[in-house]
Amino acid sequence: MSEPVPAPQGPAPAAPGAQPPGPAAASEAAASGAALPVVEFRSVTKTYGAGSRALTAVRDITFTVEDRPGRGEFVAILGPSGCGKSTLLRLIAGLGPQHPPTAGEVLVKRRPVLGPGADRGMVFQDYTSFDNRSVEDNIAFGLECQGVPTRERRERAREWIAKVGLSVDRDAHKYPHELSGGMRQRVAIARTLILHPRIILMDEPFGALDPSTRLSMQDQLVELWREQESTVFFVTHSIEEAVYLGDRVYVMSTGPGRLAKEVSVPPPDRPARVMQREKEFLEVVFELRDLVERLGKRGPEGP
Image 1 (tube, rainbow, N blue to C red):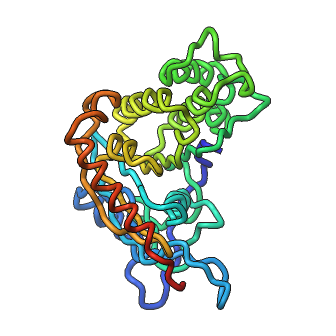
Image 2: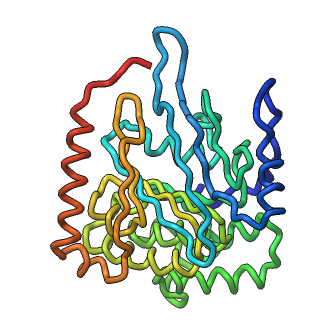
């Protein structure tokens, strides 16, 4: 589902000789008035199976995404197929079988990720609407789970129908089978953002859309992100999309997945159709394309 599952997080038990647990660090930072990092990966590895059948999806991933109050941050994740991009998202989301990591720590606001939580929302590439619910009821689903009164959740759902570019009059009572792919993804995005998650995880949400619709959705996502002021992790195979949307781009290598490079890119301060034709933009795209192609030619390593 695209909406976050309300599940509170709590502290994980400390291993013998380990550093003080996340909540202690969080309390210390709060007392000092310092902003907590939104997401931290500390030497994270994920391996499936054991022995000769072991398969390592990602190895020794370390990064920190700081809090940026009043703005948020957009982190795009690029890399060859099979490099573990989606694994990173699902580790942050607390979704199995990727969660928990085999080694290392994944922290949200300095607390270990123990499972799904209402502070994180995920949008998948596949269309995940309930077939037996209308557009309005799909978007209001998370609010219904939270016990929000019917009138309030319907009003808020209608606001979000308009925010994602659908028509309240024409589309609110349609069912998923009556919608185009782009319309269904708008519903999925609205269903996630209506809950105002602190972290938005997007796994190739525009991958199945035609080029024109994709550009329009990119522009709309930028507007919604700026309004939400959330931290977004966005997986894509499109280098142009990553460079346009991201404040920074994480480029991953394959076999197993590692964080190969972090690249800061200019913010999307012009429409996608304009910015993606500019010389400076294309130079960054060509540089990253060469890097991704080189990384994709490297042979896999053992686990």
